Amino acid sequence: MEFSEVTYDTDGPIATVTLNRPRYRNAQSYRLLDELDAALDRAVADHEVKVIIVTGAGDHFSSGHDLGTPESVAYRKEIGVGESGIGFYEAFRKYNLDYTLKWRNLAKPTIAMVRGYCIYGGWMIAAAMDLVFASPDARFLAGQVEYFSIPWDVGPRKAKELLFESRFIGAEEAAALGFVNRVIPGEALERETLAYARRVAESAHGALRMAKLAVNKIQDLQGFSASMEAAFADFLVMAQMGGHPRKPAPNRRLGGVELALRKERGEPK
Image 1 (cartoon, helix red, strand yellow):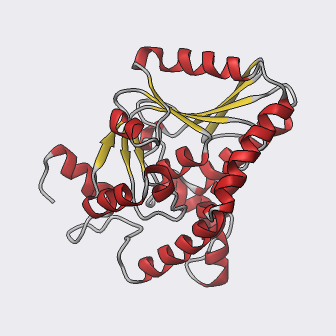
Image 2 (cartoon, rainbow, N blue to C red; image 1 turned 60 degrees about the vertical axis):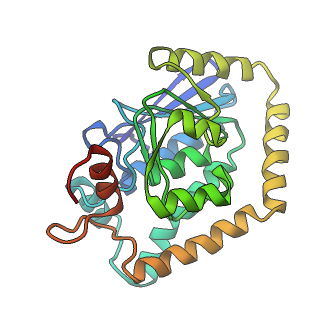
């Protein structure tokens, strides 16, 4: 597959997949998600690769779902995604739940390397990785998203607090809550993430695979995957009620991302 919205690089046993739409703060079009999935498949299939890093080009990891850039609209038309009916549901589920569950269960260790904004869909991708390393400037925004891992990521009471208030949390707070593994100064983030990945890559494929599988199984015995399915259904109900606008609404209510960004900057709603 030709990549245009992600890049793929390897350095010995480390594969790095980079979300590459810096113009849009790496907003997630369906093309980007298709290419991310293909790049992750490529890394898993390469026996030389033992650890996968996912990051974003430019200053931000991902500003979340693409709410309608011209490139995104054109790609949806190209692949035949409709606006309603079972075809819409199948595509929406694929890009917003099935892919993310698949990435959580990849057969190799994965690390999200986060700078800047990590919003909604950005949180989803980071949450699907095994580890999250972040620079101090990382800003995380939780929401009732399609892959609703947030109560598992930070605990149910904190999840409610963040969802009710719709506020950003910084890297240090995210680490204190257990979502971020390590906060690393920006100039050292890539170097230290790669160094950690190389230490992990010294282990045998089988040991890494079984360690990851064992932990994921524990979560699944507690109901993780079933809760993702249930929360996805809740998201669709909420969307039908108008509680989670998928596109910006000029002169009316702003979408959740735009509202949160304005709130953080102290701008009027």
